[in-house]
Image (cartoon, rainbow, N blue to C red; front, side, top):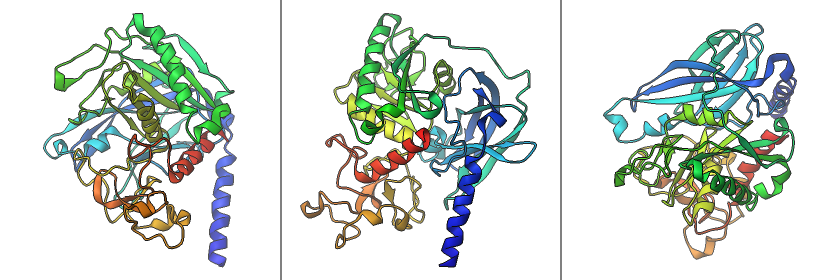
Length: 424
């Protein structure tokens, strides 16, 4: 009992230290962007510095500067060089890491552009990029020192566009700021994008828990037109000149709609304060995708766009995992010997820290896919792109299919935790 008490005290003390970091002591009210190249194969990787860019807004929290969520396959940390104090951190995902689990990665080496953003420091800092190991711990894979007075930090605004206020509830430092970016909307279709921003903004507030956070969310739109309407569909030999260079058939998965041009995404988003980037693609073809704390994307003209949008946004905002189990794109994405970091799936390796407390007494673990338990919280096999060895909490949910109209309780709790982190 004494050990447990000591652990609680240590945890509380750590939180007090984090909360005492004064934004004004260390940062200016703008953003520093670190662009880099992530390259390798299925078993190797290397990070190579690209450039530093100053962005005009800081849209993130000024209170919760150090990440306490422990989400993502990667994280980055910013240390004050003089004192050695950790002054900012965030977890994130990576398209490169997803690619590493594909068949192509076994035979080829590829390059992916990536970025991390943080408040603009007042004095020298150290940046560390860390990767979650196979056993779940974070290991440093890259580090560098950054001088914020370096005259090579670019101040060039590569995309300067008008922004619109879609939904405003207050100061960005106390709210979750979402920025909508248009993809494949021509200059003649920008008014259509404005309308879509309003429509998709309201989609957010239809679903719990977002419906309870309406006064804690800001939504912006950046009016960045493309030369042509639509997006690339390589399988149909369709190629379009668009502002963010998106494409279906990512990793040869027809419905996986993504972009590898992260630099253009950040350039466009920098016109507004933002925590989360949501890209609306002007196409009737079914598809979408998201990377945790990077960006989310959906086709805006498909009949199922509303639920696809909400599903992808849950990936991007809270790192929720897919709960379906039949996707051949990825190989051995989750290790059966490690508990996934995603809150809504489990391998039962460390189920105590997941949703075991929500399961009614007498519910079998694993839980049969039968009518008897269809409406129960349980442990249903089939999730994380495989049918065996990875489990979800309910028979169905928005992270599994579009047949239902809500997130399950486990996903709602995970989303609330992230929303509170941004807004408290």
